[in-house]
Image (cartoon, rainbow, N blue to C red):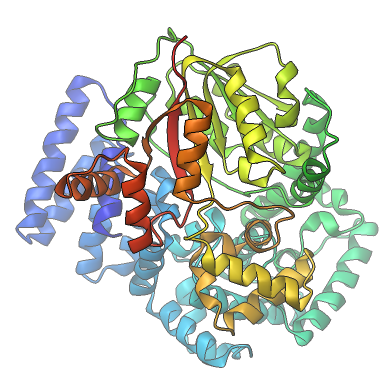
Length: 582
């Protein structure tokens, strides 16, 4: 992967014992030296020696993969790239370089991406999409399989290639009940897992719909009769709809399946069953009766957001003070006196990725995570690691009703939630009343300037009369990609059903400007600590402001900067404030 990702992987290596750490550090330095001198064979041997000592060294896996790729050993390189992503799945957030790497080490897939793009919206036949041994070449590629199973694919050309590949595999599954070769079955299962993760956002054709209907009818009868189903056919139907959609799907659990198919059965049957069972264990902390809150709740009951797979790797817990010093270099704030177990509220848990990460990152933190959606909370609870369960609890609640909560917190996180409330300022005041003097709050709010393309796409969706259904979301995406609004596909949220609904179909959304943020900070009497970026970007911005003689907490200067650099906050305005001490 790219240099930025390699640095990130290296920075997140976990601490080791001194002897092992010293040995690994020396081996890594030796390997880097060989790499910098372009002594590829020596570098490969050195990285492999290091991985014998420390198999979970993500940077070594990534660098070794780069060396093997340079030597033309593409399949072996793919395996080490996949291992690096397994150790640091947070790198999936920067999907562009990952997609470029995949295309470089898997030429048949790169050719398929070009063929699918040229033929779109038609689906090229197998002989054009993957001529010769192309299907066999990609079927067992470790990096491709890791991507499909781990994250929504966020690249239009790759999405189209996989959409065409899905049609090829469906046709193959419908032609014969004979056992498929293991590699093809594994690829079909990985694609089924990808489609479940992206909530079946890939487009279909009438011909595919007919084949799916025939296969679905046959499988419904087989599951009702408890008859054994050919594994490829089961995997094929799971590429188009979750197995739980089959009326007697629980009967599938009575059979022993090949390993790859069993992974699909776990993902699409066993885990959703666990979530349904967990719903009754989540307490309701407040009533929910505000009109906007009820509509937002309904959206996230239908489409829990986001549907994530893996937590970040190699996380070292730190105090909140140290966390802020890393997130906002040079930030000035009064250190928090919270003892060894700070109390944290995550207002807007979603599907749990954020509160789980907060619990892992903040040393000794005890975290309460609330959300309107019980479906989202059940997903979060299922994904919570057992070792965190004693420090992380979930409850269903409306922020507007938290004023009656007889608790206070050292840290409150409200990321991506206030801008979906009827009155964001009311929500902010409610949360600040729960924040202890000297406590910190993390906010993330939409930028009006950065979301101009999203606003235009939302207007287009409304004018065309698309509804917030899976079918209409699929149709809207394709129409947008064929319009002058296609730039909205730069947003990662374009590439799954729940994400796209959140992006373009949300029932209620506010957008703000930096002057408005300055006003709300002034109104609440809080102190602006700074915008949070990844460390490298944070240093870049700090240097730019220093050159201009401006402070990085000067919101007027930030407003001028954003006017000149409209995509600076394309994610959200993400910033920290501190409540003054009494």
